[in-house]
Image (cartoon, rainbow over all chains, first blue to last red; front, side):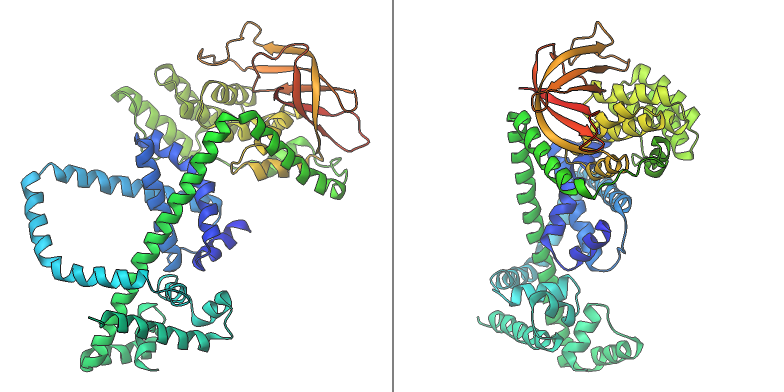
Length: 179
Length: 333
């Protein structure tokens, strides 16, 4: 079954699966959301991309089991609908201008220090290089076992991956403590 | 299990009960463990954010590619269609010899039965221009959802008087198809295709099924071949049905129109003018390859087609030996 293997492939971080899903559901989704919810084309594309990413995340964290074509479609559409609802609630909030400003001020102060550290970590991860980047993403994002990663990255076995992974984490820690 | 394994196990949801207890204990008592856990957890969050970011920029590339393709497609639609047709023929030619003539026992009716699946109403909340429309629309969609197809068909019919949209026409067609009012279904689905841009593929697919249910092979073929030329989720379904009908798309051909008629007669305005009636076009084309005459009939007229038009066409037939085939006209040269 095409859909079954699509979800498996998506779980394994196969980009072509992401592309296939994107192309297969794009025009239907956009037609639907622009019609049923009166969005502009750009909004529709944003929401569609958001829905695909959410779907991808739900696949990798295991909350989506195998499903058929209609299942994927319904799933995507419900993510899109919820996103729209959430967005419109946010919009409604914006009209309470003062309230919003207050909240923003507090948030800014609180998260400044944390944000710097986060930003630095993001830069380190961005420049991690291979094989660490792929390996760690497959482990910590795609939730794959070391054995599964060994198969994808063509390593001898899960143990090799485990060792590599340890070294990659050490590399990150080293980079983080550099200054 | 070492510390890192315990932490990884926790972060990827792989700990059993005992391991979870060990994890909790370490977290409560071991200061170094807590620190390492914080570090790995932050790294995981960072990697997740990175993966999301990369996935999103990848999707944006795909989107750009899709839009570029669409614009070249519009610029050069005919060329594109022919390329698509050629690839369909390649596939068809490839599977040609594996097709046997096994259609004796599978009638068009049973092909319809095998392939018909109710179309889900995924629209949920329905909005209308005014209060009355909104309640009428929700009544129509509710009836459709509940399987009350006759009521749905009637509600949509009432609805389109004030809210003339593709979705309403499409669902009116579906409701009639479900309620076994096949002729009405064909009329409404045809109107969806010929008056709106949306729901083209869906309407063509259900129109093909309606024709099958009506034992109208020629009309079904046209809708199906049309679907195989466009990339929609119905492409492979249409290919499968054509195969089930024992048909092969055997050649991309050129030809000349020797007879062509439009129904309704007076209608020769391509777009713009709304028309609720079923529009069809039929006639005869002579293949320039074998000099034979082929009939064609389509629910999607090509306006401007006249006797003497030189066209690109596809011939669909049961087998190579069988000379009685049908033509599908792609367009004028």
